[in-house]
Length: 415
Image (cartoon, rainbow, N blue to C red):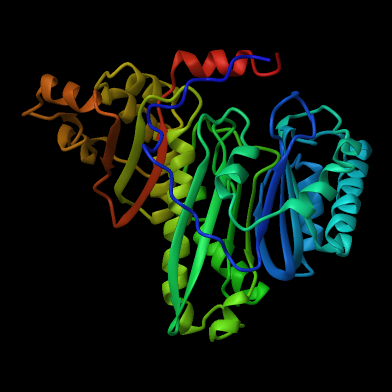
């Protein structure tokens, strides 16, 4: 087992203190899925049930747990969530399907639920069979020990190459009643937008129907998890789920049935903010990352075009290595804009690094100052902006630099 990577210099200095949420109990343990002496399984229990929504990878080679969750999501109700790290249970054929069935059976027995109310996720190495028998006894113990408090432990249990746990919390008003949202996420490599990108789970005590939850989540993911990238690779296991216990109804909160209900306005805003917080934490923990990068595209032909151009910049190895080397090489941004396949005119293009305009209307900016641009590139957070001068389309995406450590981590991933 390789030594753990040092904590990312972009990690938060402190972690949010996530409060208990009525109707959610959590426990973590060691099942020995890949490594000995390492917490590698999370169980979340919803004793009174919860409504549920989810978005999943668009990969054509999804993991067995993704298939399982998609099938169960149609029921709209959850009693438990099981997440393991160390093995993705992806590209494992009938063996993988059998492993999800056994895991769900063991979890259902442990919490006294139907197997169709159990949701699963696995993260880690692709192509290796998951020995679900290792969960036997472990899930029974975790169900008995589960408590409302250990949110940070839950985030740690689902880590793989992450260097820090990712957590966020928010309060929202539904009418006159305050509700809580807590979220956890994992992800550092194989991160590219195409649904949710990695594993993330959000929990709330609000009383919201599965239909309304799904609308909120599907919309909220667009400018958050679907706007981050580390290495342009979409995982087989990407999963983002939202669970609502409804416990706030006992405090007078109205049960929301329709996604257009005006009472959801504050909840929607707080949910989107929490998703963005978690998504940016993922980009900040990109494998080997030393720089957090925000790419802004303005003046594009459409919003869709702007986002495609933004990702062309954010995913460019040449742009990302220039950032790693603290090189204000705006020519690489020009390249990334030009190759994106969207409408662009060379002589209208302007580029900024931070507040420094480095190129304007197809030329190096007349006032270009190499020292000032280089100073921007030495910062931990760098904003790269490209204005195409064509229309009103705009987009923001977030990424990180590409360092030698990324190659080292992924070259040694299975050893």
